[in-house]
Image (tube, rainbow, N blue to C red; front, side):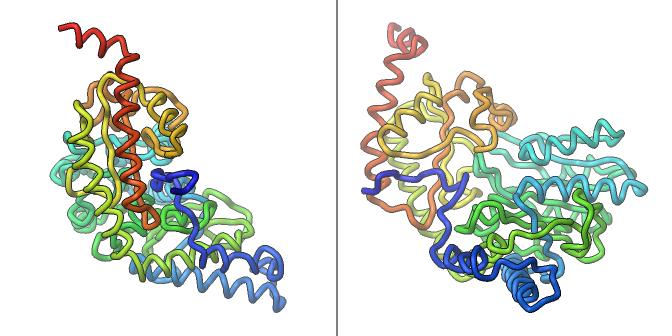
Length: 391
């Protein structure tokens, strides 16, 4: 058994050996600026463009439709702010969902302060948006719809293609935060009818600090970082060549192995789900039971507090999470679990287990052996649970 059993693949994945190896020459030998015209610079430029092609092929795009960014959050900001500001003459109304990542919610709050109107669509108990609600919310001023593909906290996959048909028929720009989905499930930007789509390499065995935004041809966005002509004028700044090369290599590997990796992660998740339900009482599984990210298991354990659960798991050598990694230190009720109707007292015991291609059946066995005693110990410490046991 490894020193750490890593069940937090939704927060970050271990970079593939091939991706890490591809990066190394661009950290030492081939360190030139890819904007330079000399031979070394052009070699770095070629490596960036090869990576761009690999990323484009993973999602069915053209290479010139890929803008490299430093993170999924930056890609979301560029999509939401960039599209809204560049197209505000056509309208200042934006539609989104109640369970978007903060890197969509916060830019929308910023735009709201600038006079944009934001509609937040509710989700059902499984975290799904009704496409009919999107249709009903569209008005003459609607300029952008932003709906995530897969939710990192509850795992639910949205009916993106259906929503995309609605926006395409009406000529409205459609963005999807697909950071949790790309590299885990097949993603084709044309089938989904998206105009903008965010992705990040650390979700599919690439490096952190390398991400991208798909921008469909003729979709106008305003740059957030100005001062250079990089990325066709859509994002200024010297690119991190090594990280981009790693992202490109990871994208190439994901395209080859996606079906195999997803099937493996899903098999482990389904086994874990069924056996947990047998071994631990009063669990609330969250998100859609079937239409979800492969390898993603989310639940709430009644009568305990999630931080204590994570600390005990960590002491047993298991890394897991409670909600989104971006808000894991906030120590407050999850807005995603609130949106799907989970009682705030129950949401305190939320747990997210995310599995990948390098997890094993033996690791699942170990988790199943240590998790029930941890829950029993925490419940014995809980005054709420003790009170219930008296009756």
